[in-house]
Length: 174
Image (cartoon, rainbow, N blue to C red; front, top):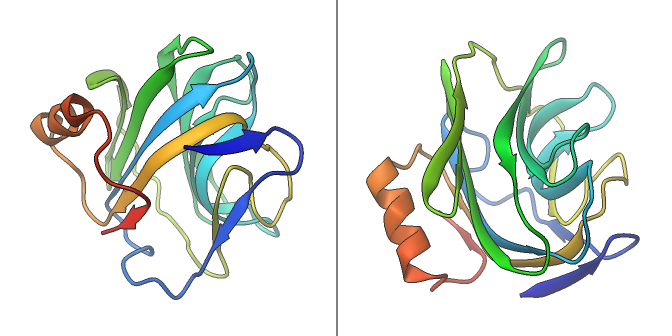
């Protein structure tokens, strides 16, 4: 996995990658937190000027709970997991969003969902993992592995399969 120090470690992604500006998506990754933390990012496609885009990471208010954030230029919606993940061990995290529905899966099991008609505005967004690019904040303290972005919502069965494989692909944009 990629080690991230919680202060300056990060990776920016090219924004010419096809398939990142979609209304339905799934973000998958394996995470190993080095310490308890809040307000951190695993993956984002974000524009700091108006706060639009998407992000998957650690909740802003509650340490070690997972957040899935979506926003347009005026409103945002954050889904937070019901449980916190433990530090010092690997966890599979997957967030899905489509018009009207968001879900968070932890270790292959759906943990949270909500219904939201939140639109996503990708104008001027930039992609990164390990921090909130553009705002230059929310640096993750831990390790990330097998980050994947899917331009569709994965089914519960597909999520279980990915979790069951234990991480068999490296950074993929599908």
